[in-house]
Length: 533
Image (cartoon, rainbow, N blue to C red; front, side):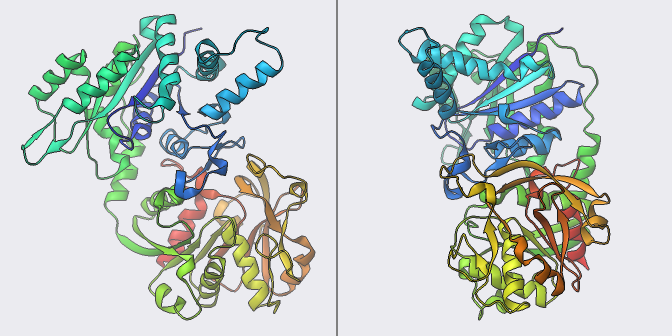
């Protein structure tokens, strides 16, 4: 069996340069060349996972099929590669230390002093190689979060140093993403930040094989030669990553720079096929040349930070391309919506999405938005908490249960139409204890959802504690709310629809997690299509 090859992507100078997009773009090119590729993220923070982090702090918490709460970069990996990630694709310092401490408590270290080297670094190396040891992948790309020089990242860089020493030189390589800024006053690009970044990386015992240089101006030959000379890298291994119009342009930019060829040469691999990116570029063609425009309101609690709803944003891009439509998202804070201003703020929208979230802040604004969409026949999609708000709105304004609510918001409500899931009632720890990952849903054949999915049994990813209270099931049915989908084993209501409405669907799950460039999610595709009418 051939060895798995390992590529590490580190970052320097500043954060947010786009390590995740570069990793995903390289993976896409290697995948198009016929290789089985996956990407993992090593996050330096001490949280076990981002599941307990405030969205303002960390952006979206992405959920995998097997129920891992992970970094939002895993969403990029899935959207680019069109293959699911798993628990093994996201590792945090918290998870590393927890594993080592648990081993120490069990006596597995035989009384030895537990230290960063070798115990922490050994655990990191073990986690890095889990995916490679499955035999499912030819190449594992590992993105190391943070910036070279951060105290938190040092054990990860040290683990890479050890692996470079332990492995054959053509089985492992390091790509360093750095910044080459343009100084307007001097009228030139400056290489010094990159030189310092590479120097810092090399002080940790790791020399980069490739430099990917983020820049707003093209790198000329003199800049490339200077970087190669001072950073001890081959000239053809200096890769320009110029600012792009969209993240979906980056694979083509990296193809033009021949990053994939440089990597294959370093890893002593032959190309199985030439990357054509045919379907990818068909998507880009439709995305960049829309024939229509729709205005979609995204009603949420964290709209100041668009990354809090990253997957919804990207799912709308995918759906817009299918419909050859530019989707203009209007980010609307639910706290700012009142009964008086809702008509004015929402009047120009072609479709409304009420987004996921937790807690009571801003929910009355969400309920008002749902009511406006229902009464004015505007296409509506409610996701997770958004679906629950639709249930509450219907209970209040159609069934007449004026104090209807979720017990999450009002424990004393006389009409708890949204209740805590039975298995959640004894849980006190918050981290990793929600209903997570992929669960089945059986659709009613006469429902709008069935016509969207075109099949009876679907599987979608979840992240919630509260559910539709089935004690009220018959009341809602009699009042015209359609229960379009249920979990076949538990009876949990997964999808609700308003029948006398052109397009009104609320889902307990998160369809946005499964939307990819090559497989846009059908709910978003049909929602955008309905919004065009």
